[in-house]
Image (cartoon, rainbow, N blue to C red):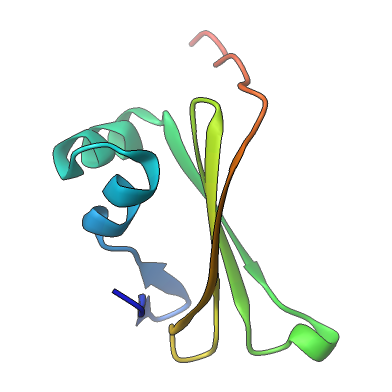
Length: 90
């Protein structure tokens, strides 16, 4: 899978892509997104990076980042450890 679908101003990420990145099932990915334990950040490139996007997903102590071109083609993928942050109480 080398493309992420564009949906207006956002993107549609296949659950299978995140499941592979985080070594989870697709159902676990959907559940983690619903309960807020898998989060995302979308950043638009500026200057020489204009037309590129960076999508970063975090779950527990891991992150996965996709860099895309304007068509949604995946240019790079990286996975790395991150500091786990405790969730605030409701």
